[in-house]
Image 1: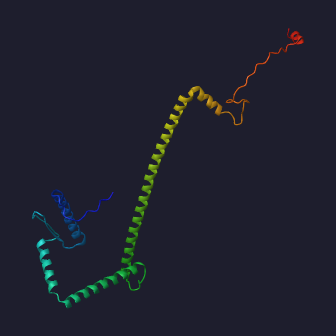
Image 2: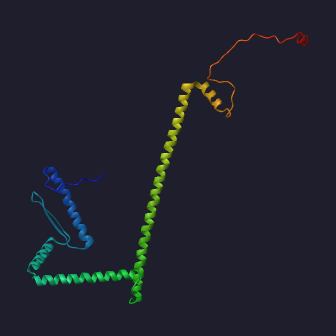
Image 3: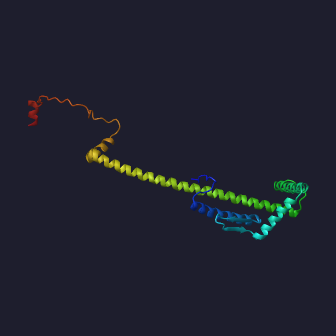
Length: 232
């Protein structure tokens, strides 16, 4: 969850204001140091706290940075409109030259306009292309490796979920068997199993669940004198 947007206004609570000042001051000085190292520039930061305490950072010397700043300000204030226009014209010409050089380099990297290049220039261009190609392949391999690792991680998660579901099914089967024993009894369950094993369509000719109509009949004597003689 991201942090909420902070309203930029004075913090009323003294403790919170002091903590915020300490954190942001350290962050500001750290960023100033990183900027001076990465971009090779002169950076000077001066901070006075609410109690009058001084905090500063200078990439070289604070005195030299302040003197250079004052000199630049004086030169800018003394610059006439004509001089200022000439200065910006020179800046524009420099930027146009840099843009032309970048466009020419881009065309050469695409394999265009190679007629005026020497063997050494072509070798340098080839080296740049090989370096670029190597970086592209490294990035591609890294992306493929990350995708494979992500797929493997998802496969492990799916396998764990599958095993969990399998265990739950086993538990449910055991609980179902226990419930059948309690409801039907052991004998009824066995008879239910045997009846379920009868072939489809087999019938005894009797309706097991229907009413029974029983009648008594007179006994009949099927024994005749001839049969009795034979039996004796």
